[in-house]
Image 1 (cartoon, rainbow, N blue to C red):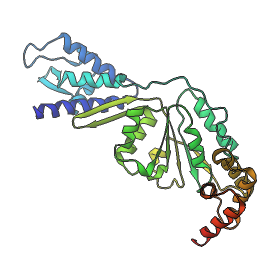
Image 2 (image 1 turned 120 degrees about the vertical axis):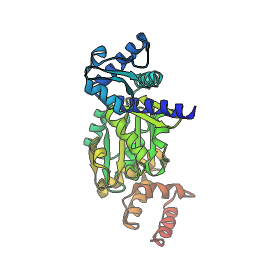
Image 3 (image 1 turned 90 degrees about the vertical axis):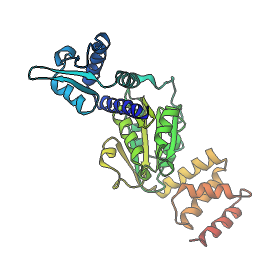
Image 4 (image 1 turned 120 degrees about the horizontal axis):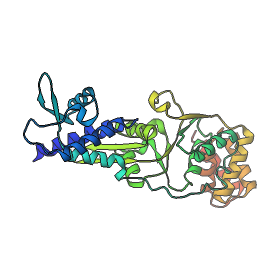
Length: 327
C-alpha cells in the first residue's frame, strides 16, 4: 500500500512539475488527449496501448513522458510502440490542480487616495509603483539602497492595500512562503529584508510565483498547487548577493540617503500623522537625532517619540543624552 502511494505520488509530482514548465500549453493538451483515449479504450490485454498517432503527438514527446515515469511502454516492435499511462488518477488530479482547483479570489479594490503621502520625496519611484499597481499583469519591484531611506516605509504604505501581506525575509521558516500563499492567497506580497531569505524552498516558490503565477508544493503525502495573480514588492540594502534569476524578475528602484531637509520633512510627517506628536516637537526631535546622534534614520525619531513620558524638549534632551552614551 505504501509503495503504491509513493508510486502515485511520483506520477502526480512529475506531471505537475511538467505542467508548470509548459508555458505554451502543448503538454497539457497532450495529457488531456491521452486521458480521453485511455478512458474510452480500456486495455484488452497487457500489450494493448496507444501509438503516437492515436493521441496526435510525436514519439519523442511520448518517450519523454516515459522517461519521467508518467507513461510506460507496453509493446515495442520494429513497427510499433504502444504506451499506457502509469496512473490515470494521478495524472487527472495533477491536471485538475493545475487548472486551478485552488484559485485566488480577487475582490474589487481601491487604492488609498493618500498612498505614500507620508513618504517625503521619491516622487518618480512613487509614480512607477502606482503604475505597477494599475498594470493589467504583475510588475514586481525591488526597493534597494541605503539604510533609513524610506524603503520599509514604502512597504508599510503598500501594506495598506486590500489583500496584501508583509513578511520579513529573516523570519520566514522553510514553509513560510508556501503557507502565506496557500492560506492567504494575497494579491500583494511585500517582503522586507529580501536578501535574508536563505531557504531553497522559499526561493523556488517565489521564482515560480513571479514568473508563471504558479506555486506548487510537492512532498510525500502532501501535494497542492495554486495559481495566483500576485504582485511582489521587496526591499533590501544590498543586491550583490541576491541570485541573478531572482533579480531578473524585479524592476529595480534604488534609494539613497535623505538630505537633511528631506529628513526633517519626513520626520515631521511620520511623527505628526502616525504618532500624534506636534510638528514643533517633531522638528526638535529630528534636529537632535541629526546633530547629536548623527543619524538620518527616521526610526530613531519614532523610538524617541514613543519613549517620552511627557512631550517636551526636556524629555527629548534626556533621552538623547542617554542614547549618546550608548555609542
